[in-house]
Length: 92
Length: 312
Image 1: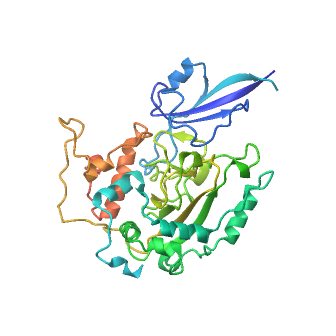
Image 2: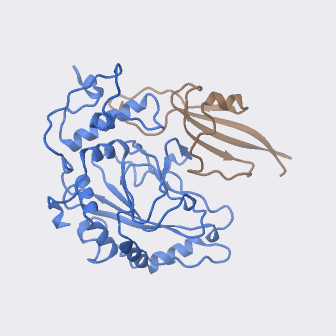
Image 3: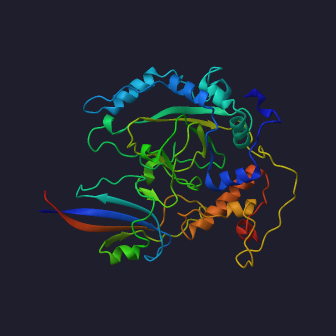
């Protein structure tokens, strides 16, 4: 048996972990299931807090950064990114 | 295309233009006649049968090489890109298409590039190779207010099993670097192009999108043409009778639902994926784009810009 990491990234509607999920990604290091873009139209958890309650461990959250003068209205990437993990045993 | 100033063209309405500004797309289902769809597929060429072991790239290269669709240099007038009578020339000559292009880009648009997108089913792939395309924004970081249009043409029926183009409405005003956003597998409100043959999707160049994985038995074909304005994009649609500057409507504290089809209402309608704070910045950026297209430098929706400009 070996431990492998499952990683889930949730994008939330604001910096609070209990705010709604607006985007998500799952990468499964066990190889049980190949996840890919566009494979799920509804989020796996309604909020980040719901993921914590289901046993996912938070290991990174995006920082809150000030807005540079002159660029206050420029939008680019999603702001509120939270990385979670689970460790799963595999037969490898 | 030289006839594009014909006043009888079905130009886009103000409501359609506002929706394009807010959401970055307009979809027209089954507007290309079946006879042209068949002609296009014949000119595009049939992909070769799958080979044992799977090598979809070789099949793709053979499909492109054998296609009768021409190579076209970037920067030529769109009107001269395709031979008269070819399927693509006939599509661009459809009144709906001419009217939409005129409305969005003005006179004499410029051809940028085109591409024959073929998505291959599992039989063409090695194990684990058949995946969807990462979500991306085309080209590269593009800080312009002006925009290009990408016309996506679906010459045959597309089922959900065939994947279809995935796109996220309302993402077009974000300044990102191509597939840097590939980490985002799924975004709330994403749409998949499941559509009948002859459907056209007009996209603002900035809309985030990607090809869906094909899990069906047959190949899926989509043809894309990117084009840009050669001159002004201001007030090229069916403006209608002059109405004067619309009055600001009450905001936040309202005792009834607002009119849904006004420009202000369309520009301040959120997408399911909007963050709570930056959703308001999306409204600001939509207002800026409407100002650009309408030539009205003081246009506003729900006071988002006026508030910031008072005393500035």
